[in-house]
Amino acid sequence: MDIVVFGAGSLGSLFGALLARASEHDVTLVGRDPHVAAIRESGLRVTGTDSFTVYPKATTDGTGLAADLALVTVKAFDTEMAARELATGSFRAVCSLQNGMGNEATLARHLDCPVLAGTTSYGAARRDPGEVEWNGQGDLAVGPWEPTDADETAAAVGEAFAIAGVPATVETADEIRRELWRKLAVNAAVNPVTALTRVPNGALGASPGVDLVEPIAREVASTARAVGVAIADEEAVGAVDEVVVATAENDSSMRRDIERGGRTEIDVISGYVVDRADAHGVEVPTNRTLWTLVRTWESARGLRDPASSTDSRPPSTRETESLKAPGGDERV
Ligand code: PAF
Image (cartoon, rainbow, N blue to C red):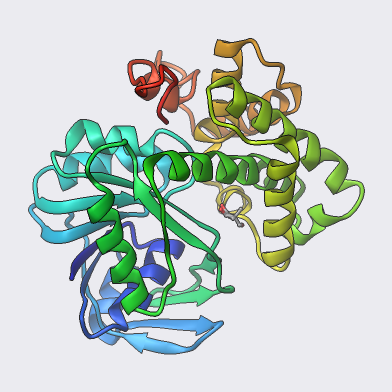
């Protein structure tokens, strides 16, 4: 399969490398220099869980590309840019493997091909140009974002991962939607707390950290139920516990964002929870506090645009307001 991985950050580089290991796949990574220049010169080196070097194509220009599949792995605040660039090319399917909610809606607005949603708990970190550290085997699930006829496309994408030795669960639109909300509970609990306290994920497995993350997960579960996605409190809490244990040594992506002084994905994680909760009259005080704290940090560093009228509420809201699933509930 011809595969474009749009966003050669940690996760994109890892999945690009894993897919490029299979001789059946022709992989092109879209990223930035000096990472792209290093890959072109000496290949992409994976260390950690397994060590190997692959030689995918790599480019800094995401326009005019053509492939069977585009995997989107950019930060959520770059999804609009990615969608616009991908729209100048031609793809049989596009699959978001990003954190947060609303990415698929943005992709669908710009692209004609089927849009798939994906969730993953694979751990990866980028250190030097041309290298990515693989921090443990995680789970991967893909499914059609909307309940259309994209089930076959999702199966083909699952098969493409399986050929490369990456087991992927293929789900229906409703199942992947539940997965997105479960992953939202994980990201809402783990990311802002580890980012603000600068601790590895494992620190949230015991008191006092666990006393904070459990209410966060419960608030997300209440919000999910309010929008029509049946997730029990204990399921959301269990999903967080599982990831905290599986990624105990890892630094969350939001902690890494804050430590490098960059913008975070808080709006499409905690901000999304607050927005949906407000729309449905659900109380989410812990998520609201974390959203405010991280936004305060971003504002103080000039990472948010105070002049923009759209900047004070989560981008996901703007993307979902007009999107209603057949049952009347919102699609993310
Ligand atoms: O954003 C992250 O860091 C990851 O999604 C996760 C699963 C929380 C592990 O660190």
